[in-house]
Image (cartoon, rainbow, N blue to C red):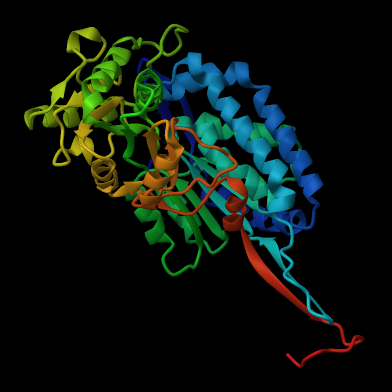
Amino acid sequence: MTQSVTITSPVDGSLLAERPYATPVDIETTLTEAQAAQRQWRRTSLDERARYCTAAVDAMLAMADEIVPELAKQMGRPVKYGRGELGGFEERARHMIEIAPESLADHVPTQREGFRRFIRREPLGTVFVIAPWNFPYLTAVNSIIPALMAGNAVILKHAAQTLLVGERFQAAFDQAELPQGLFRNLVLSHEATADIVQSGKIQQVNFTGSVKAGKAIESSAAGLFLGMGLELGGKDPAYVRSDADLDFAIENIADGAFFNSGQSCCAVERVYVQESHFDQIANGLAETACKLVLGDPLDPLTTLGPMVRGTAADFVRKQIHDAVEQGARCLVPAEAFAADQPGSPYLAPQVLVDVNHEMDIMSEESFGPVVGVMPVRSDEEAIQLMNDSPYGLSASIWTQDMTAAERIGGELETGTVFMNRCDYLDPALAWTGVKNTGRGITLSALGYSTLTRAKSFHLRDLNEKQSGTN
């Protein structure tokens, strides 16, 4: 087995970094130190935990000038947008720190004479966070900060493509002088990752990635009664009603489809349009796509960088090719993006029409800058098609009728319903999904429920008269 892992930049194929895998001794030491540190950490006040976590957030933000180009080199997002991820990182981290006291407060039911009764949220122990490369700061912070605020220790395993992000987290917590052992970033093979899951020394696994990998992790944890948070992707739909602001819808759906080269779990991958506006929406999306600048993500003028690797781009190229073979039409001409060549991670955006749900482009996750557009005749048809998917992360409705959006949203099999926006996580709301998108919750007050366990206290005072015997 190889003893190290390398990062190859999608920008130019250069070697960015090489890191050795953690040894079995490193892993065992980390697990043991995490257990010991957590026993002390769980007794610290929320104010004290917040002080450390806030200092780590501040330390991370102070690295922004280094992080932005470093991130572009690792996974291809243009530097033009690099600070946006750090802005989202800060928003989520500070929100979860702020709401911790209320979210973790004792739940006190109506009291009975002679008794004191309450439910306390206690930390689980050690939380194992397995983070992806596509939004490497945002996805990791969803679990790391609330896990620590809840009184847990955290072990981070970052994606091989974004190992430097894990090192940034470690540096931030080290600068914050977080007590040793409470947070540790490890470089791990798949085998070592499974070993940690099966070690008996962690209590929760939070994973973001593919359905295949999520099933493997769940299989590794079989019979161990571990807590499990799995966000496994999506095929998120948008529905444009006849009363929508069409220009606004085109601009924002295009952003939701093409931002980050479409490499987002909640990217818009399929669009349903009331047939009276179909041509305007489809052509508008194509025109917006043609205005994107595909190229070197280190160039401040670039608005569409490479996908993470050439094989990922070729997967989407095949989806597009197969759809065309089945009768779909491409609205973005190939000559508009000369950088798009077979095998290259630089993939042109594409809008497809004359599509249907027999095509993979409308049923299987693409994770690239492509979107299919279909006409519908009614809300009911749109609902049926939006639900015709093995995934359910988010769905967006574009309308000026909030009552209709709420009614339609109530019928959708999804974790989040948007109206007139998409591809965004509000940290005050639960981030969750249904079907093959996975299970569990991050963010919001509810996110703390998966990082703690309930303990009930039923205390009887024998010095007071009782009104019953039970």
